[in-house]
Image 1 (cartoon, one colour):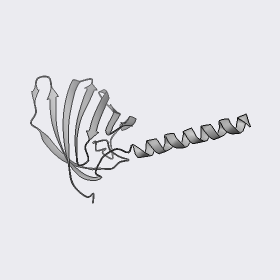
Image 2 (tube, one colour):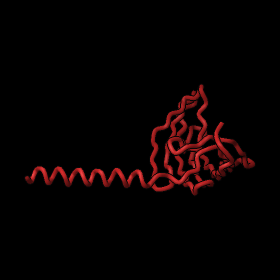
Image 3 (tube, helix red, strand yellow):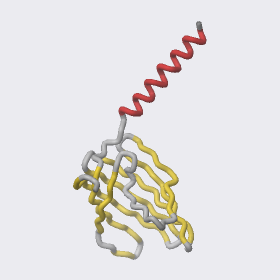
Image 4 (cartoon, helix red, strand yellow):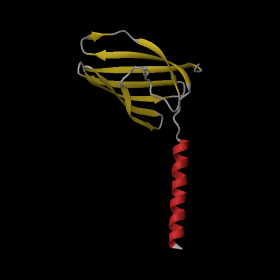
Length: 135
């Protein structure tokens, strides 16, 4: 009887935890996003740049991977409406590591990316706005 009660308790707790995880889904409007980036790098003055990304709940990292890229997503975590991630790119000059944190507010987001490479370090500030459906 004690084994059955323990198993039932375990089952109920497991179901509750799984339901809680599903209920805390990230607040992102899936589709095309216009992302404006401002790069802060020592000794460089770079004007803001914009690009378009297709973002979804499963792919909420505002990063475009090129087909010939040597970059890999090493860490991906969702905490509330914030996505925390790490990307490593192997290049001839060494490894570039980008760590980012992006917080979604439905149809907008704000994020920050820290980039470290053999060339130095830089910080990228990002702001995103949903503009339509992905094609």
